[in-house]
Image 1 (cartoon, helix red, strand yellow):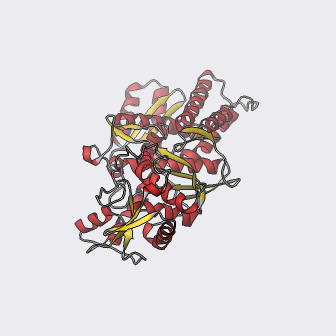
Image 2 (cartoon, rainbow, N blue to C red; image 1 turned 90 degrees about the vertical axis):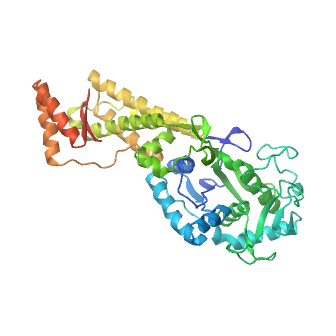
Image 3 (cartoon, rainbow, N blue to C red; image 1 turned 180 degrees about the horizontal axis):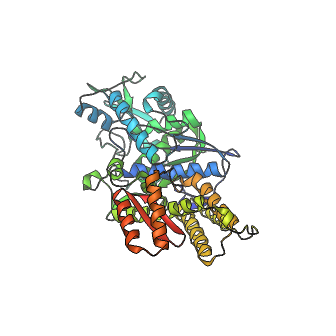
Length: 461
C-alpha cells in the first residue's frame, strides 16, 4: 500500500508502527462559525482513509479535535455577547450535524483544546527546560532559531520565510517567525493559571498536546488541509520534536487539496465562500460527498454547480443500477458457473486504486466499469444470476468505504406503485398517450420515471 507523504514530497510504501493497528490525528475546525466546503472536503477525505484502513482489517484509532479557544473564538463570542464556552457549545453540534449528513464517522476520540490545558503547560515547561522558549510582555514564545530544522517540514528557507497568516509580527521577538506558546491574559478573555502567569494557549501548542495525550509520542499519520502545512504543522513539528526527539511525533503527513471557485482558492476575503448548509439547501449531502470522491484527495476541487450536477447524475446511475438489480427476481436468470464475475474484478480494481494513495476516482471508475459490463450482458441476454449477485456484493463492499453508493431505503405508496404498473401495461400495449399521461401525473407527485434497457426505474425529485 502506497501513500503520498507530504513531508517527504513523494509516494512511499506504508507500514504502520504497530502491525494491524493505525493511529491517526487530523486537525479539526476552530468552532467559531458553521462548517464550510473546505471543512467538508477535509473531513470526507480522511474519513475515506479511515474507512479503507478498516476495510483492510486494521484497527484504527482516529483522533480529530475541536479548537475551542482562539482569537477568532473570542472575537465572535464578543460580537454575539456570549462567552467562548457558550459559543463552542453552540457551534460544535452544528459541525456534528453537517459531518453526519456527509456520512463522516464520529472520531474515536474528539478532544476539545480547553480540556488539555495542563498537557500544553507541561510541554511548554519541557521546552523551557531545553532552552527553546523566552518570555515577552504579552506571552511565552518558541525561539525558532533554537530548532535548526525549522522550515524543513514545509520546505521553507528560514531567511526568506514569509509570515504565515496566523503568525503575529512583533518587533520585540528574537525572530519574526517565532510563535506564541502561551498568551498572557487580557481583560475580558478566558484564562488559566500557568507558571508564567494567567493566560491561554497559542494555537499551535494545542494539537501537539492533544495528539500526545491520545496517541503518544509517535503515531502513524497526521493529516489536515494543505493550508495547515505552514505555519501550523511546521510549528507542531518543531515544538513536538524539540520535546520528544527527532524520531517522535507523526511518522507520515498527509494533506488534502484546496477547494477552488473559478480556479481561485475559496476565501472569505475573495467573497467566494460557501458553507455546507448553503450547499445542502440545493443538493443532497450525499451528492456533495460523491462530488468529493470524484477527485483525488490531494488535487484541488474546482467547485461549481456543474460539478455537483455531474456528481448527482453519477450517483443516480449507481443508485438506479442497485435498485433495479436488488429487486430483480434472480430465479428468472441462469445460474452461471461463477467464472469471470464482474463483481470480483470490480473489487480487485477498487483495491488496486485505493492502495495507490487512496485513489477514490479510480475506485469509482471500477464501479462504473462493472455497471456498464453488467448492463451490456443484460442487453445481450447473457446475464447470469451469479453475475448480478457478485455485482451487488461488490457495491456493498465498496460502500463500506465510500458510504454513499447504496440508495437510502425508499418506499412508495400502493397508489403510486399501481400507477407505475398501469403505465408499464400501457407501454406494452403501445398506448403511448396513456403512458405519457401517467408519467406526467407521477412527475407532478414528485416521482420521475426512467425507461432503461433493464426496465423502468423510479426516483423522487
